[in-house]
Image (cartoon, rainbow, N blue to C red):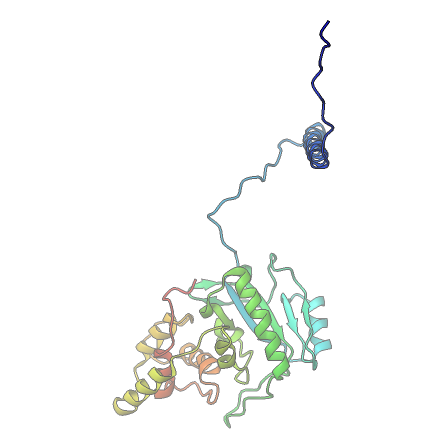
Amino acid sequence: MTALRLPCLKLPTEATRLLLARCQTAVTVLCLLLLAGCASERSGAPYSINDSLKANGKNSRIDIIVLHYTASTKPSALLTLTNREVSAHYVVSDDSKPVVYKLVDENLSAWHAGESSWYGRTFINPRSIGIEIVHPGWTRNSDGDSGPSYPAAQIDAVIALTREVARRHGVAAENIVGHSDVAPLRKQDPGPAFPWKKLAQAGVGRWFDEAAAAKYQAEYVRNGSPDAGWFQKQLKRVGYSVPETNYFDANTLHTIAAFQMHYRPESVNSKPDAQTAARLRALPTNGSGL
């Protein structure tokens, strides 16, 4: 009689055992998810959430960054910004090693800009990030005094923080502004001592084409500065809110001063002179800003 041969059964290898274990784990997780869904339905929820699909058509709600100064000491600023009806997302201290205080999550609105406008968008709190910088402030004067300088370490911290926020939300360079830019009739912070040019050189914010500005200034010195209507149109082109009255009314002069605090800080005098006109003309913009 011929002996019956049975097929040889091989024991599973270590790799096979690991694969089986992973499969069992996956099945267990799937069962738990199904049970969780059933439990949610049993608890009375009228719908279930499926977040497995993601849309491509989206962007951040944030498209403006507004820089402020506190006009106070750090303790006073932190007390005000945490206990009153005013706030900011961040506060950058003036310590030798600056501390950045995060007071409001970026997905929430902070109450920092108030009545404001930029590129025709008004009341910009819901679409902006507010950064307060501890600084004693500046008093308007006629002798060209820019007020106390900002410590280098503090400015380095502001640059790093602003760059990170801008990258997270895709904020354009022309939408990194001062409080005085978005509220020129009410505010003058961060003041003429704030080094906007240094920020722009570090890739944060915008600056004018200095070679073009020198050429335009020579032209305006020869031929005279542009009229009020030109200044109003150009200020609107670069983002400011200004009425087109075709004469140098108080609103227009305040707005010229705000432009000077940002781009001609060595002389903030509200005058529509040749140098101001040249720098305004040489300031780049995409035309819409937002």
